[in-house]
Amino acid sequence: MSDSFKSLSEFSYAELEELNLEAKDKVLKRVKEDQLQEHYLRYLSDRRDLKAVTVAFTDLEGRFHMLDYDKKFLLKSYENLTFDGSSVRGFSMVRESDLRLHIDWGSFRWLPSDVFGAGKMMVFGLIKANDGSMYDSDLRGHLIQMREALWTKNQGVANVAVELEGFLFNGINAEQNFELNGGFEFVSGGGYYHSLPQDPLRRFIDRFAEAQRALGFENEKDHPEVAPSQFELNFSYSDAVIAADQIQLYKLMARQIANSMGMTASFLPKPVADINGNGMHTNMSISEKGKNVFYDANGQDGLSQEGWNFVDRILNNANDICLVLNPSVNAYRRLDPAYEAPNQIKSSAIDRTSMIRIPLANERSARIEVRSVGPDASPYLLLHTLLKTGMEGPMSETLDSETRRTRTRFLPDNIYDAMRHFKGSEFARGMLGEQNHQKFLELKQAAADRCPKLLGARIKTPEIIFHHEVTNQYLWSQF
Image (cartoon, rainbow, N blue to C red; front, side):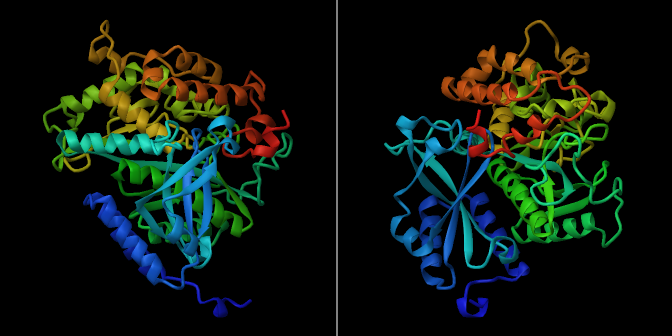
């Protein structure tokens, strides 16, 4: 059937940007949930050209899941949406398989039709247990609770922006079809900031930037990165929950746009040996009553004592949380000092091999940059962990702050050491809860067991195909 007969909504990119920025602003201005629900239910009811609403959620490892609900059904049943949680690997047991999806109306987004299809909207779901309580393994729910606690305490807001790198490879499903001898095929040989205006990488970046802008990301800059076929598109900081949602949308859009161009967007930390890997530098600050509490013009590197305490706590607990920041076998290839890898547990204003960098900034932009984060980390688990650690993590009683910040220690260089630190950490167990701590550890152990123990110099097939963002339920169940 011709699309002209379907009469489904197709907004211009300019209209999409305006609508999505308005939706974000409602959340940042703390419009109440019941008002948001009433507003969007009325909007859905009035728009005959909308056919479906995509409700999305994220599992414990960070894999993005989506269900499309017919709009008419959703309007009648939005308070009773359920799904089978036991079908999501490591998420829930068979005995607790039926879980509920509660719509987070503030996350309502209008989608570019050329990327997602016409007549669709998207909203993020909060996962509930059968009794209506928050499901403990829904880290997005935990992050929202943290947001509310910060605001209640002193009108606090956690501000986050990430620098998320990826590779563009030739062919569809290049990761699933990876073979040891063939490897990945670059689509561009250009380097940092360099590509021809119409080469495949630049055309991909341009399309991606347009879709990102339309979704209200508030773009800043985009460019090829250091390695061949590598890209990075930067966008403005936002509230931590919105920032985490945008990470998921960033990767989803990149994969879909690449797929439509006959290519694969990959967020594996180190898919190709002997070149720079992918990172997700995570910039963070805390504001209270609109004032950036990390800034002090007279402080060391322009950072306040509160900001330095945040840094010190992360450094002190770096080994314990490394598995959350780098959750795959492949991630530990990236922590290689030969490629400017941020594997040293220290902070610096200039040394980019440090785990935490203190960027040159003013009162508005003062922040810390956690550089030792892989792009495959679950954004909700990641931000919950970094914020919780920075604000509440235990401090060493035997080392002064200056020593903690400058002494040379190294993060684990393999997933087994990272799991050992994570397993033995009372702080990590208390922060995530016993059940989530055990679930996450079991998922990482299962992935590690399917891969050679020694990384070696060559990328191995199992570390690609059993990566949590690549493998599927069917493949996983064969072992």
